[in-house]
Amino acid sequence: MQTSIAERLFSIKRRIEGAALRCGRTPQSVRLVAVTKTHPVELVRTAVAAGITDVGENYIQEARDKFDALSEHPLSWHFIGHLQSNKAKYAVRMFDLIHTVDSIKLAMELNRQAQKAGKRQHILIQVNLSGEATKSGVSEQSLIDLLNGIHPLSHIKVRGLMTMPPFFDDPVKARPYFSALRQLRDRIRSLNIPNIEMVELSMGMTGEFETAVEEGATLVRIGTALFGGRR
Image 1: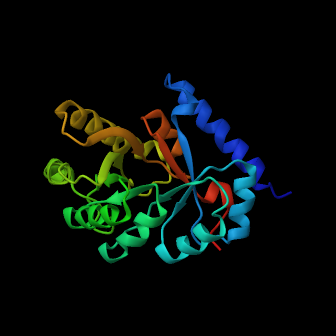
Image 2: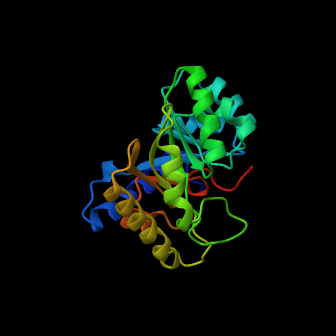
């Protein structure tokens, strides 16, 4: 018998709780971001009714349709896809947290659009720890330079880091990447760069979110385990 979204959500939350407790963390320190790309609004409504409070979208146009349709719900909206500078104004209008900033050009455009909107846009810096050419993100070696370029921008606020490890069949193999991001966060914290907070670690998806939580994730991005395969 097929399980419902409510049942899947309950199971995921239990797994997050277990992973958090195993490493001495409170389960409340981890937020589940429901990845809703390609799924219809009706299915997202079902997830919201089941208790989802954070929604993650990869594409601006698809997000606009859902954002408007679900405007009556007090949701936190996360942009988790690759963002082009020419779409920054739409991202600023909709999203509470943008996970995928990886260049000074994009940061400056987000700052400009946030200033026009009278908003301080919260962002994460996406770090490409694997070095894979197919993945976006700033390199670890260039991260500090990027942060030093961003910190004077008054209408954006860096809240932490995000990464995507290579795909592995065994989630344990992703652990070094999650551990490396946590260590990078701690190193940046010690630098006390103005306007740069290291509160959030966005890492871990359906295949390895428990390992990510054990390594310090505060945001896990889960789609398939909650909604099933893409539509």
